[in-house]
Amino acid sequence: MKILGIYGSPRAGGNTDILLGRFLEGAASKGAEVIPLYLREKSFSPCLEIYACTKGGECCLRDDMEQIYPLLREAEVIALASPIFFYGVGAQAKAMIDRCQSFWVEKYLLKRPIRPSGQRGKGIFLSVAGSRGERAFEGALLTVKYFFDCLEVDLYRSLLYRKIDGKGEIRNHPTALEEAFSLGTEVAGEATMAPGAGTQEVAGWERLEGPSPWLGILADSHDHLSLLKKAVEICNQSQVGLILHAGDYVAPFSMAPLEELKAPYLGVFGNNDGEKIGLQNRSAGRLRPGPRFLQVNGQSILLVHDLQGEYPQGSSGRTLRLLVHGHTHRPEIRREGSTLLFNPGEVGGWLTGRATMGLFHLETMEAKIIDLAP
Image (cartoon, rainbow, N blue to C red; front, side):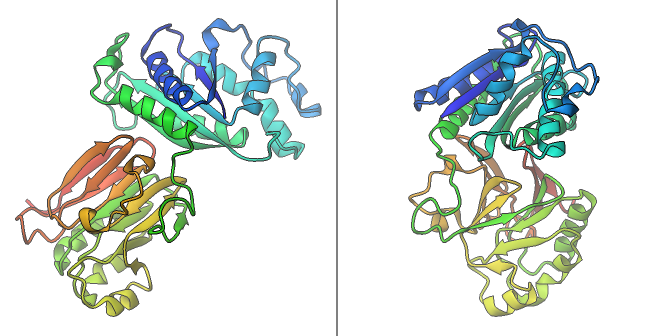
């Protein structure tokens, strides 16, 4: 496997350099061929918008981009690392991206394939921001997504870290370097669970696409209509693209608030869901026995009710983006390798006296626990 690592920071030895270095170390440890590309050491012009590429799909400027174009075309994995500048990628990275207008011409105007293999590649984005703002990465993520798509590459995973500014500060982050190394081993070893892969317990994957990267995460509503209605209102206000429920609705009538959701929902049965046929009918088939393996906007998610009782023993949690579970009624967010384990707690609030739900962002891996009642 050929992996191109693009160092997009103007600062040598900075935080994104360190992250990308760890990612490539992990990939190399699994036998991948890693190709480092330091944009700050290259000399090339930004796009001059002279439209010469529209005639044949080739940029007419003669500079170091001539060395970069074949690397972008041939790499099976492209990892781009850049700090955030004014809510976007750095100047060096943006200049390279803009010079890929010739690929856009090839793909959309000339209708020619970009990748010799004919198969879509995987894209990785590694970034840090000095800001603590919730939307710090949104602009860069949009740019990177469409850059990758132009190259027939899917954004597979992003590792994004806020409040990291001083040179080398990323070394003090409790999980960042381990996550970058683990992601490198995952990508190079093709360890990510793909449709049809895994143990015999994995019956199949469900692919879903949502208009928003935010997910609403619910569990253990236990017939509490008013609090479930509150959770639905929060999901609608937050404009989530999909809602996952980890089970224990109890009676079919308790599904009524979910019918007011603006986004689709799906779920698994819990141990207290005795009227499974009634629940399945009321939900129009959205509820099924767990575990459920989902591909949501290209990200791998496992949805179960009881983590201990339903998690397939042969499947490594590190191969998943997100593992959603309930049953304990206690909210918890923790990491195991590159996987986030998310228990949103109980919507119903019957057992612990605290009613909660969760929100999760597929791209930034931001996870929130939200209280539903004072």
